[in-house]
Image (cartoon, rainbow, N blue to C red; front, side, top):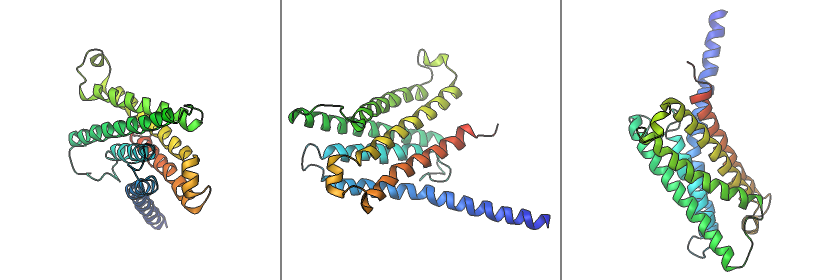
Length: 227
């Protein structure tokens, strides 16, 4: 009976692992779907505003997501390459994410100036400004991990810096997912998709799924890591 129980537990664990890996892999396809869906409605280049949703979702829900997932054991697209190579691709993707975020921010900022509309009057706008600043700040702080011998940086413990970088990056990504979610309540998105329509619901689930995937990855790597 004990042997049967262990075998049953082993089967259950394998099933859980398979489902978890499947969900992790799905994150890549869901990210591509969301980016293409937003671009289809925004039609980048059709107006100055069109670059705001396009660049924001591209930066936060694709480049930043992929930069984090590259270290995942179950969803990395290059799991077999050396960690140094992953780090290289990570900071490249993070720089692209920061550039997209800044570009999206400038697009809506200039657009509102041209239309004489006030800035930061909604939670989406206020948190969005904070998220863009924090994303750029996090990218700059990552330089300390690339060059740990820099002044001041060399006085800090490298292992602690890595943990803080991962945890702060996770919080910034969570904030980014939140502002993307709040963006689905914007007048532009509701006008094009409809509030609480099927398409709206599918899009709303995407950033929640991304946040849960990244949170689980970082928690398993740092918070629940066995010593």
